Length: 189
Length: 315
View (tube, helix red, strand yellow):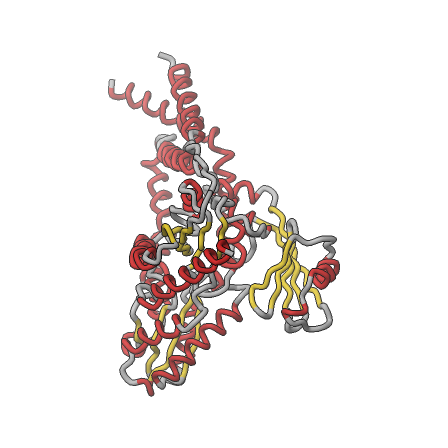
């Protein structure tokens, strides 16, 4: 009887692990890619491609010099035919706005930085999920996190014998705890 | 019973529940818009927002401390507080409320130190005055709602206009100072990448004010915000620059309100990296708020703008 129950438990366990694994495989990979991207957010922009171009307008300007005509000239140098509006963040700067770009001109030295922004394909979309940019997605994320726990736990009881948890499994599981524990200890030193 | 058949159904149900649960988002309540018929002016105290409850509480307290003084003159009908990100009430939420309550004009008072991408681009983009492409994309990604109100919106200048910050830092420096000749001042602020010069100028002017008033001759500046990726190293470097010349460093967090992440983890963490920090660094993890001068500035700027609006509408 006990043996039969154990067999049933293992079968349920394996089915859960297998089917949840299939179901969540795509999301796991998406979150892993997004996780790597967001880990390196200081070195690159995982969401957007920002193309920057430096411009030299050859002379300095005063705030009073700036008119629609001057802004049109700046825009033309940046490759823009028209602008939406311009504004002064400070006395030494003017910022010009376009549909998907901006131009920040330093009036004192007559230089400018033109920035064109576009979404980084694939990463933008998966980061939308990972950042919970959609209000209701956090509930999906919570369920997903819970299911990952189920996948991890059921994974430990898939096999029996030397290759099961009671065999090599327990040692590998314990070894897997070493890096995070070491990181926590080092951080507290 | 065949396990294959038995578990097929529950798993299918489970998967369905996953997607149903995920897709069951909150429904927006329909809003009733009233057209403003006559002048009704509101004040929106707008700040950055924070995960810290203490931080948010401080900003709500600011509103409750100024509310009566703002309303007593009679031409402002109501005040509200909004946070740009991280927490409700958001700007959109508050502007919708003002519209529903029939306000004709909303004065937005940004409780922000000086120019940054938030003040210059993000906030105007949220309220429909600008359409900065980067802000539009970031706001969408960060799930910050944009809303163009029916009411006329007027944004006041930022807090760096005037002596408010200088006097605030002076008061807090004096409270820590023991021997000005042996001390140097370290100002730590949020900072801004595109407007670093403006931030540095503001902090330099503030430090010069402290020098004139206290005799503390040396100062250095460090950042703790996105510009330094929220790392404590800038704090440590700024303190070390002072400790090369002076016996003691007085560290003043020039942040609007107290947030555990900034005053404790980042700035506090930067201080802990200093050898002999217990003896050589004087630090209190406080903030600009609460400050009666800031409160008075909010009252004054609100009144000034409401007078302008009333005069314009009377003419």
